[in-house]
Image (cartoon, rainbow, N blue to C red; front, side, top):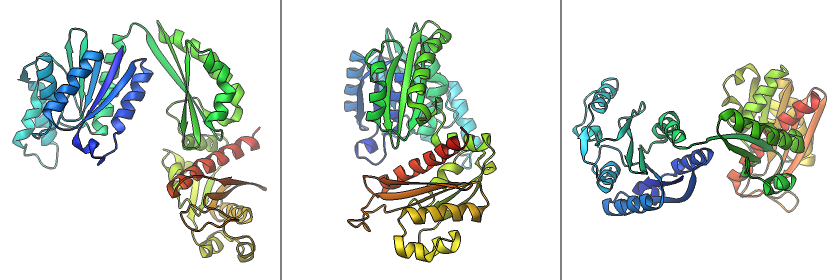
Amino acid sequence: MVVEVISVGTELLLGNIVNTNARYLAEECALLGLTMYNQTVVGDNRGRLSEAVRTALDRSDIVILTGGLGPTEDDLTKETCAEVMGFPLVEDSRTRDRITEYFKNSRHPEIPGNNWKQAMVPEGALVLDNHNGTAPGLILEKGQKRAILLPGPPDELIPLFAGQVKPYLQKLRPEVIVSQMVKICGVGESKVEEELIDLIDRQTNPTIATYAKTGEVHVRITASASASETAEKLIKPVVKEIKRRMGTAVYTARAEETLEMAVVRLLKKYELTLATAESCTGGLVAGRIVNVAGASDVFHQGFVTYSNKAKRKLLDVSKSTIKKYGAVSKETAKEMAVGGAFAADSDLCVAVTGIAGPDGGTEEKPVGLVYMACCLGDKVTVERYQFRGNRSKVREQSVVRALDLVRRTILENHK
């Protein structure tokens, strides 16, 4: 089945907001085994939106529209789609009651008159309850064509799609689609492809696809079968073979687990505690760790030692070390890690110091040069990286490598 996404909103065309909804929907539809050839962004203009809907319905089986379901005059998605598909608008009493209840429980209980517009739905449409807003989701069916209308705010769209639209789409397919993600860190996409090229070249069912992320590569294995259990059996040997080939570079085979979650999981498993000592990353490593629920069980303290004075005062980095080797050096990184572990009374400490740019680089130490160290007991591992990209990119890559260094240090210590 062919699916198409139409994102509605002039603010998207102007670049005022990033279209994260399209990315989310594309990924979810791919996981469902739906084929997507086109995506469209159209402004809040009835004529152009009408043309976009007609074109999409002509070439696709399913059209998913996002945005334009609000109470204002420029919210035209529902009205336009209903007109194109030939459905009159009627009041939905359940939606009206939900709008009343929504405002009753809000800080502003008085209901603006234009909100009642959201209780009008195309006749015969399947109404999807929106538990995070006033605009319901809608599914319109006409012959073999389907239009799915979802609100624009991601915190409304995602729960609606995951809880109600996804099960609906799954029922449209005669077979079951199952996917599993293998996540790899510390190895580039070209290297991963080189290691897996024979598997990729002969793929049929399941299929294998690689996705490059910052500092990571995700490999998605997707199988279709008459039942979930059968699809899972098809996936299992492929996942096993990828793990065998990529070894400890694989940090998880669960789509929902992030790198920081994997690090916290290992810390808990081996009953270890962690501290961070950061210069150029400015606390980003610690921030990723504390994003994980339960991190307080294993994370002791984060030090942001941006200045040389802070490195000396908080981490006991020797003044002579900084003078002789510089703040960005393997020697300083090592002392930061050792000092951080001692100051925080933690089992491990990962330290990061570098030149994020755009200024501050020299021929000897160019922008993008980063040293990081991880201390565990008497052993300190120091690594040197030369990252490319702007300041934000250098810092982002540094965070990923630092987290992976912690992960690898734990694994090497518990072989």
